[in-house]
Image (cartoon, rainbow, N blue to C red):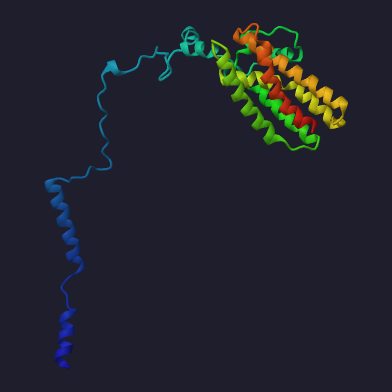
Length: 255
């Protein structure tokens, strides 16, 4: 036990005093003053850099930075603005011309009116689609759901008459033009189906009315075809298959 107490006394024994600490601090300060300190003093101010007089802005400068001058003449003469102004309207780019649609409708409603071949030769499907939907809607109001038959007969009839006209004419005709003419001439059939909403057509008056409407549609279609394809003297030959085509729609409407 005496040896252990002697060991503890020797372990915690120290000759370090406060006087020795102050002396070491003074020695380190003297060493720093002798060799110079690497840190600048807080009181020392950095010297301003030299700037040449040419780089100094003059007091009379009135320009603006990063703002180019605006020239109205160069903007007005831009080719992009001119090309944008010369672009056609959106409906004309889509092939929808209400003036031509109205002229074609009047041509169909008046079979004795001469047709304009330049207008009738256009591939305009806006009116035909509208008249097909109107025919299906009027049949639906009359209690007949015949949308499938209307679209099917229209597609098969357009293909058949297209092939027939290509065989009869030397210039040829597109399928879109045939569909456009046949669709516009479907307007009298829409009138007949509208009458079927209010009274029955399964009598003598209805049958006579259906025959008149078939002749009206086929006469208008053949008139437009011979005007657009320069097929003078062949109107009756074209009117016969057109009458068969519109006869199918008359059967759907009457019965």
